[in-house]
Length: 89
Image (cartoon, rainbow, N blue to C red; front, side, top):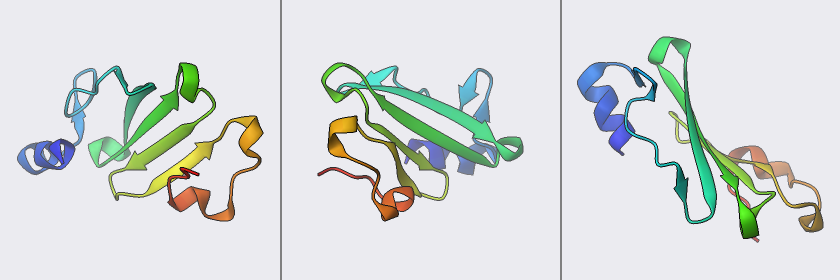
């Protein structure tokens, strides 16, 4: 929501040093990263599991497309809809 407010006010997701809004370094066992693309008109935020959540990688972009890009090996392979949803169980 804060990214969309920033975009509305600035007509870009880009800000010196990264995405428009400050990205927390970590949230509940996930390291967070944000990358701006398309001349500031797009972004992808990625959450990579750390510690007990290691192996999980989730993303969300400017169009609200949620994806699971990795799971721990003991979870098996990614399901067919992993490119458009967050796998949680």
